[in-house]
Length: 308
Image 1 (cartoon, one colour):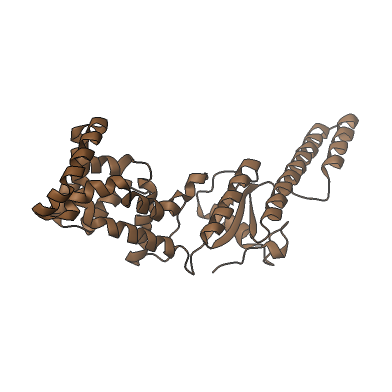
Image 2 (cartoon, rainbow, N blue to C red):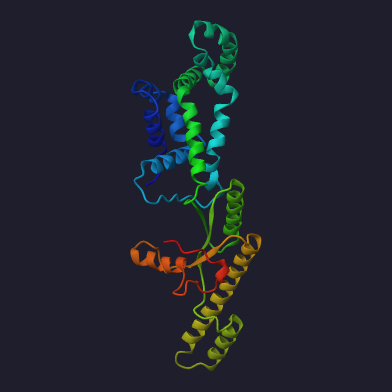
């Protein structure tokens, strides 16, 4: 499934408020903007949806696929971001009348709130401030639940049976991002299963070095004859593949040196997109290892443990 941010927010509102209050919240213009486009809402709703899927007990396994960029782990900040938002000065001022309750309470907060309202009205406009105040007041009883659920899901990700897998191509930029992910997950105390080095280019054989293949290609081309051009071309392709494999191994070694505790698996580049069972089975062989349990080119100590 793709995350439907607004629908998830609507589900939260419906589940944690009365039908009348839910209708009031959803009709509010500020809510409509917040639930569909405000920065940070998507990450928070990802945590909400993950918590919902886990609580339903309908699934044996839930996999969250994130974009290959640093923002992929923004959802880990959702609990703290929500806490900062709920504890912010503006939110406290906007909810002050509702929290005070009664006419006496309104008198207590009225003077300060009126000054605040006049200043903010000049900046935001009176209607927007009114919409925002109504939205915050209507949602006030749900704020604690937001924070608690986000924190509960965050803690859920650290429990046994959960794991993060970092996937990166054997390229400098991609492995720099992978290093960032690994460090961030370590800082957060999240369980890291390891790194999958994706779309690698292992040569068909390592018995012929790039230098020897290039030299052989020159010799064959000079001799000439039937099939010489094809043979020389094949040798040059092998030489290029050996050089590429060497570069990729160098990058993988640099990552391993920086993160010796992180297990690594390699998956060779496929000839086309993986979109069927046959392609998935080929990937499974690469991920789970050869018949002896060890993928070629990776020391046994660096192999991820096979999972059932």
